[in-house]
Length: 404
Image (cartoon, rainbow, N blue to C red):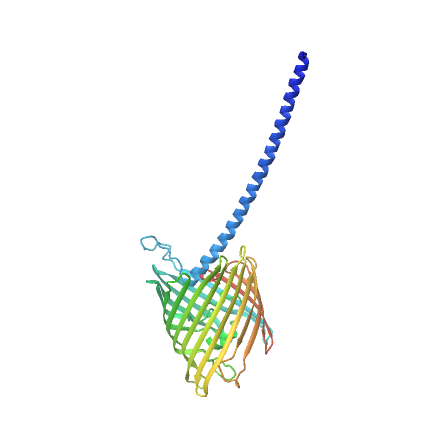
């Protein structure tokens, strides 16, 4: 028979072992719970990062859709009446200061100051005016670049624009220079559409095709003033002038969730300024292809190609010329992007007057914000010399935001 003190020792040992076991189990459970909490927290952090990247991507796609449709959402209430803030126009000021080095004389000056005013006159009816103070042949002059009304929704998928406008031919002619990824205009556009882009007074009607992908067709009738008398080795420019008719088809195909392909066809029929001071018949045909891929955060890869065929009927005979450019641009974070631009063209003149031109440019851009940037660029005319650029672009207002 066990003595009382032995029973007490057995009972005490049992309770001590129970406490040790309970403590061990509790510690194990706490460790497991801690690991689960840490894992859940890491999953939550990753989910937040994924959502932030998705938000940036959605914002980029929204900006792209708004640019394609050329629609800015009017600030109106549900009844269609403008609020007090909606009656105030959008006002923007964009400056373009350039330094050009390598050719004599070197210079550093204000290349252009653009003033933009726009706003809604009525829901789905918008007015936009762009005036510019730019440098031409060493002197400054004020010019009305664009001034037009946009009827954004005429019903049935139709829209229209009336007034003076940069013609919607090709991918870059309708964009203002501060939206480009480089300093100078590709030489093929300079030769075929003029030094400052092709603009005219008239009307354009667009139609959004009822297709599962974005497809818009536009036709226009314009009156284009004769360009400035730029001297090209004894000949004035051959860019279009007089009565001009244009057509463009633009489609966008989503290749994947972060990649889209944009395709465009352009046509222009009219006249060109001939060196014997009379108008010649002119047809321009263009095709452009743009591939965009969006990576994490602000990363974006852009590859664009555009080919233009120039057909001119002049007294010596029919001139058939070609030109193209391709552009590659990589933006690797919010502040930096780099790229190259290569352009080749057969000038729309007889071969004995001027031969083909080739130009290669490399650019590095530092964005200080959405509207302010500094760009370094080196360009080489493959038949000539190197030219360096230092460009400062600053902007105030909604029009100064990039749309590429």
